[in-house]
View (cartoon, rainbow over the protein chains, first blue to last red):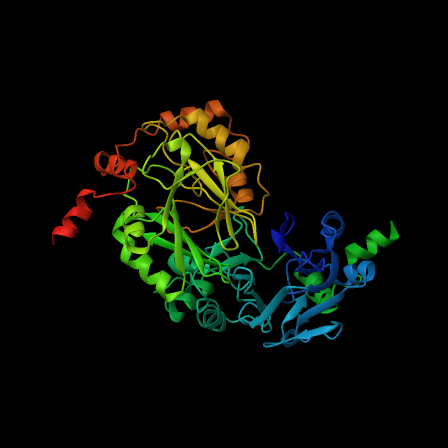
Length: 241
Length: 241
């Protein structure tokens, strides 16, 4: 399997490119609008054909490149069905895996950061889970925005993610300290908010005490992402240039 | 592929069990004498047959379970040829991969912690490197014991390990803070001793300033490991019991 972990320093977002060596089909998880040229160049250099983009959720901190990638490559656009994004070509739900050749992504509904958030589990050739904003390395996504709920996120992490085999690689949607990967065992042992022994009540208190400012791009990013990333201001500006 | 990352809390050592799903053959990297029953139980529960143990180097902090595993399972015992351990069945060197079904481990000579240290690269199905004491997460093995040399370790890390693809998973031989896995990109970005921008001279100074006490088990572990872990004091005590 081919995997690339690509970083956008503007939003500290990881985009994952997953490719099948046999069929040369590829999936991109959580592409970022501003990084579309990098992603297209990476696909070309790896001799991969993009068949689908997939979002973990409707992001508030960056705009997806999904619409633009569909325009440029003819790929399909997948969203969690629970996020209710009508412009998506594929409405994902549990037990409906997303495939690109031998790459098989299983949706794991993990609400809490948003109401319709998915993680995606890849079981073979080695177990990996792409956790979006549900579980970060020694952290998690905020739960105070629209659709967020701390107790729900706690249940998603403990019931869905911490139930996975402990060697499962955790590939987060963001990191703000240049960390790249973790495992379920590591997060159960040392995630300060969510490790074994921290109760749901304690977690809710931790999250209530964060007092975070709203994401800088929230006002534009959320509606843009509800439209699959179509024509947000930055794309329109680029088109005019 | 089957992978298990097993921890010995006595020496903070990670032992890796790598198995081929098709042939059910398995390799164990750096087994620890006191944990042999755990490792044998894990092999049975996974329905795997141990074909070989392999050491990254002659350890000073724990005794290998290699000899005992050979006695109990009939497996072979592999060491880096450069470590000059005569009782090993297989003397590994670069370009002589170790195989167990589809599991293919490529020896990477990485002297510096000891004179004959190897890391082992597994390129498929996803790139992983088992780094022993050469590269730890945000750290590295000491270089002040017999055969150790800081400048040599710096060269091993930069020329051999940091030349690997940045997504390559780094599975260390130890961790003292419950971390499990990293990547080459992560270590190049945030390993305080070895990240990009730290010079060989700076690294040598860092290592010279550590002033570490000798490992508690060194006097017994090194000779025992030079004998593939045969009849160290603890094993003899167990045999008498």
